[in-house]
Length: 265
Image (cartoon, rainbow, N blue to C red; front, top):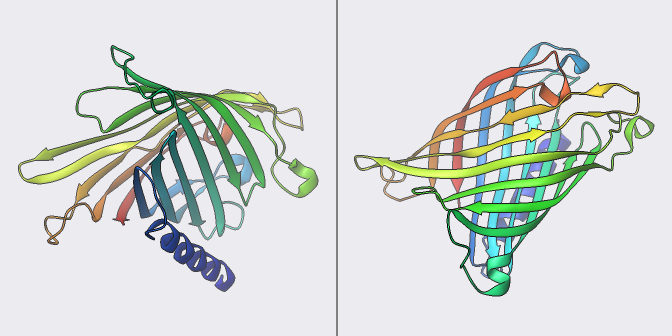
């Protein structure tokens, strides 16, 4: 436990210093620490049941001359030795914007931009590695801060059971809609943001079918900035995770509300 906490704190300190330093130049940059707490289901392939889970997330989004980047790192602790037990999970995406490359925004209609996106997913517990090359369609929807539809391959590059991880899988595809919708009620600020993904079915190295899944993680946020004398620094709210065929397990469908606290810097 001590080594995990020490590594987590060390990583966060380094990341915070990098992304908040004057030398880190970008068109824009948003970095957050998020804390989620809720009762999450354990897939039957990992023993079934459920457990209360702490999730500390470092999340960063930034734009640059020819595109934008996004990543998050989850540090999970459920107390369940078979699932989310002091685990780390991370995703990184880099997008090349056709608008930025050609210096134009003349697409017309609701389609505001098209990009080439590449992603990488990594899990310490399952020892899984996935590559996600594809296309991003950015949409102009009234009142939305952004709305993207990503269509990518889902290429498995895990070492599987031979490395002590989860079984390696065949390749598949992913469709992901991610968005942010800020709004106000009176003089109070809120937002609904998150993503919903669909990953197609595939087989694993044991010959078993890994079912398609739908994972949604919408967040409802209340901005505490005005109450605390600032704007846009601290948020509280609810993260609602719904997961049909969780991790490809046809026997596990999850609906899990989680308490949410966010510090943006």
